[in-house]
Image 1: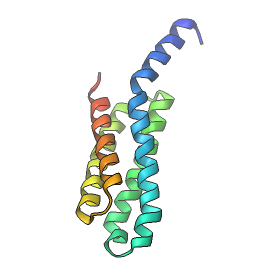
Image 2: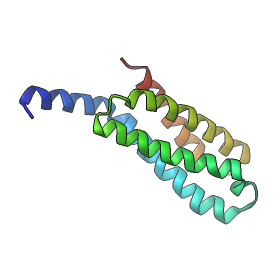
Image 3: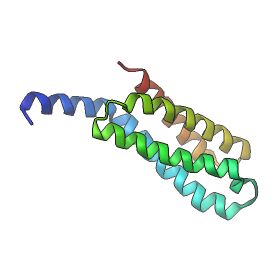
Image 4: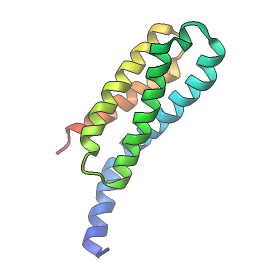
Amino acid sequence: MNQALMAGHAAHLKEMQPCIDACTLCHTTCLHMGMVHCLNAGGEHVGAEHFRLMMSCAEICQTSANFQLSGSPFHRALCGICADICEACAKSCEEIGGMEDCVNTCRDCAASCRKMSAKQ
């Protein structure tokens, strides 16, 4: 890779790093909360719609981070979808209650992804 291309990639990665970090934290939080908190709590925490949404959120966040890290030209579009899913997950977790870490992490990730998806 030539010097100019490497410098451009480094600058682009630096711009994306806050969103990559937010997506990675959201993936970890949703996966952990779902597999540990929700499964142990039972009841509405493991309702099909809620639990499926949490796992979808974890997966889209990991995929979004991977698309950004790989320099995919589709990372902005995927970030927009990730933001939508994170917002839905935050709402579901808030409605059930007792999942403030997940609510806050999903909202932070949604905001970061929304910002990334709007950049040109």
